[in-house]
Image (cartoon, rainbow, N blue to C red; front, side):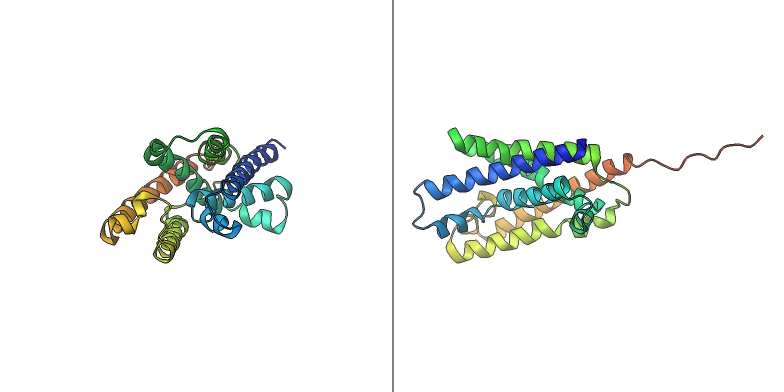
Length: 214
């Protein structure tokens, strides 16, 4: 029951942050049409990753024993989702938070998406998730989402000229510099993933020593 309550809190934080952020874009007057606002909304790694976290934790809270619940409860799936949302928080607070000063509802959305959801997700992973079977051979699978998002963001930027993050702004930096930045971020993701896997393995109990017979 405790796990389902925590999962529900994570889902609530993620859905609330996502909803507030979408409402801000739809009502802020910066876009000519709702479709344009949604298109911009879906450009961000933060949004797409929080959406992933919201779905995974909603299923875990409401239907953990369903086929979908069991599928999403796999050790590699959960460590990957935890990595992605943890990196949302780390990259934002290290590289992006100083670039703007959100206020009001934007500050609330900002903290839900970049602080509350990442922190709760890491704590839930440490406390509840099955870590048996975690190995470093999962790294290629885990890195698919960050690399896939990078390709998606660069293709979008080439199409409409908007790059959601300054370190992948090919229009300002050029593709050579962007590729260097992506290589650095990929290395960071791999190191963080390896660290999470090794931490997870520390939580897996080893075989009990054989008892001596006298």
